[in-house]
Image (cartoon, rainbow, N blue to C red):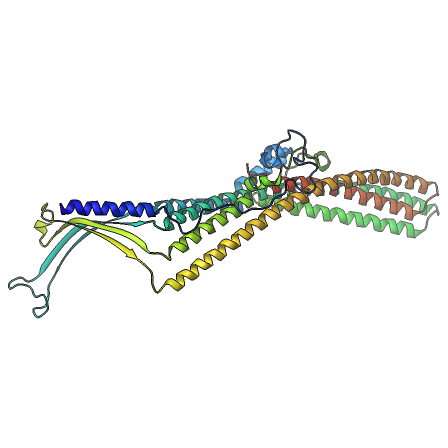
Length: 474
């Protein structure tokens, strides 16, 4: 009867503790209001794209980039890049921590086996009976302990571990998107250097032709030696530029190779810079999509969720902990009686309430610190959202204005290229001096190089918009 009454009371206590375990010292996490606008600044329409156009942020990079050589480079970088591999290891570590946290509600179970012998003093408080030289004791038992999660400490610990695991996944995706953009922009810069080298070599050939023409004019007494010397100086300057561009190509190839996780080597190019389309028919969508598609924004929110959960853990430390312990097994003073059931069996059940007293100041300070960390992470999350929105708006503005600039410089380059032919004809007929020829060639060279650079900037802006929208990790 007494045993049944004890079991009934213990059952009531357990039920009471389970009901209390639904309590928590902090509320559930709620996403902060980010006050995102309905459309990006610089977007033509709320959807900023053709009707039915796919959202750029969800397009796989193999579809977004048309150049086959660039796609192969990105594939190699994703497979071999060391930063991305380190991010994968962070995910593995966070996954193990999450598995560990999920075991927090399970009771602790230990097996304890002990045996010993000893003697006591004849003059001590517990002398042995006459004729007994020593005393033996043997014990084998299971010790079970379980802490009731009254204030949500264990649940919030699991939430924090889950948020950290999800944050590590989003951080890896962010590295992925940045890597895709870096490889693409490095590849476009390499194509720009190729275009600059081709343009500069053509101008070097033109400068050689002009120098030969001036030498003939000098032999005929039509120009002075100053004209020949000026043209020779121009030709040497262009020749120096060729060497500088070739150096830049080697450095850019080395940088791309390392980005792909391999030793510096030549980079294969399948297309020329001018052959790659810079216009974008994809839609940037609306700013609210950044919250669910851009990895660094999601990672910042996961960090906030983790800090919120850790605030709950720190708050729960201020309150009493409830632990139930139970031990049962076999105990005897002789080895022969150790497992002589049921006489050697014993059991023990205990409930413990532990309330920190002198550590209250330390625990309250830790709780206040956790709230400061939580507030800081919310500020960082809001700032990440602002930065993401700004980056999209910047990329949209760049794409729109660079298209206008490229159109103007393209017309300018055609005019200046024609002016070089006209200047040479006029010089041959004695109607223009050598300075006009040199100036026309220099202006045409600058315009051609500017046109190639602006086209590369348009490709970069298209890539940056893709990254800013969270594209590239799929």
